[in-house]
Amino acid sequence: MSPSTPPARPRLAAHVLARRHLVGQEERVILHDVRTGQLLQLGAREWVLLSAADGTRDVEGIVIAAAREGAHARVPAAQAFFAELHAAGLLGADDGGEDAAPWGPAMPAAPALEPGERDPRERPLEVLPDFGLHCDGGGSCCRIYASILFDPEEAARARALRPDVLSGGARHERAFTPERGTWPCAASVVAMRDGRCAYLEGEGRCSLHASGGPEAKPLGCRTFPTSFADDGESVRVSVAVECACVLASVGRPGGAPLLDPRLVARGDLDERIDIARLPDRAQVAPGATAARAEVVAWSRRLAAAAPPSDVAAGLFSLAAALESEGLTGGAIARFERPDPLDPAALAPWLAALHGRAARRAREDAAWRSELDLARRATQWIADATLALAEHDVLAALLLSPARAPDRERFYLRAALHGHRLLLGAVPLSLALRDRAVRLVVARALPAVVAGAGADDPACAEPIALVEAALRGHGLDVYAADAAPAG
Image (cartoon, rainbow, N blue to C red; front, side, top):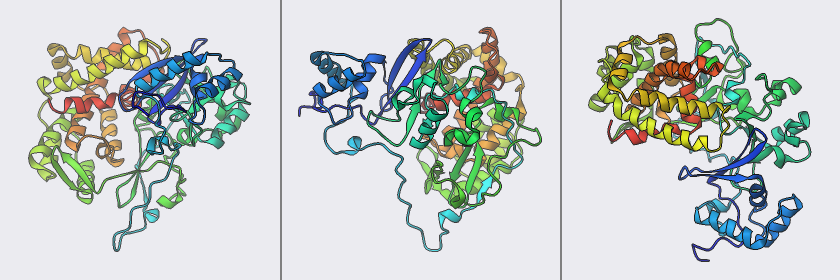
């Protein structure tokens, strides 16, 4: 088969995510190529045609299957449609390569134990101390992410509890799309209505929780915002600062624990929980690595250090010290007594983030609802970084004290405990600068949101909104763009 010839039995490739969105009364399916970032918008009829392409049917068979679902198309038109998708690199190959295998949550093979190494299942769970979550039940976290995953049992339970949602009671495909590609796979993604999970009630309450209790929700929702990271010594249980409730809980007594206190070792956790694993060697700075144990010990020392009055300045100074001195005590001293933030040093990072956010905002405007929190958050970040491109505006912001220093200190504490600075795609020193930039943008966000006249409760904690938007919508790759100039 020529590379320019579509597969005889086409199907959507595993690197393409199909997400159904209802904008008002209009249904749209967005194809997202995770390799290139390309987005393609389909109508409901086109999606029925594509969803029938599961790799087992030729084009004539696809047309017949789609017609049974009320989506009629002529074979030549369908052939042209699949040729267009193939030319865009969105179709899977006919051969038995990796992309042709059904996508599922295959568990990676456990690495062989070193002599004397403890069984990973026995590693203790080390929970972030002195924190309890006070959830406001407002559903902000159900409105910011592009994908909310359900396994087959969870999806069946959801449809049984709320068969009226998208008329999905008898038909899985009316409420869900496959996590990846178009063949049946282990995980499905629920449709979104104006950027909200379809099971979210108008007042912000989860209808699955209301109908069947907390266990009726999918595992990811039940564990959110708890994060897990295995560092070879223990499993660090921390919190992702991606929800306003997390920061609103800082300093408040009581609250729900991040983990059931009866769970004490990794082997006690549900095996479906995603546990990140620190690499054997971590990138400390561009071109410099260190053993995992050394970095973990250094991270503990940093967590115990006295936080500076300006956390963002401390992170930027620490990054420069890591690149010049490595993992030394002197680097941590630079964190505790940092140099003031330099607008010129921040400028390329802010420009890189603006470029990513502005591009995504333009794409979102073409298909997302005006009520969609993700669309608005991305636009606010684009507007904030544009404003900070003015030297005088940025300089004035940096001279002003942080509005919520306790939030910034907790943000860093949670990231250090959960090893979140060590798990990204950039070296530690760049991750530190990245987090400093996020804090600066979060400081600028309230003025932008006020100017837009927004009163969404998700805006109450700007740091969490920035975090959720950057990770949930791919804006965090800006750090790689900024790195050469940083």
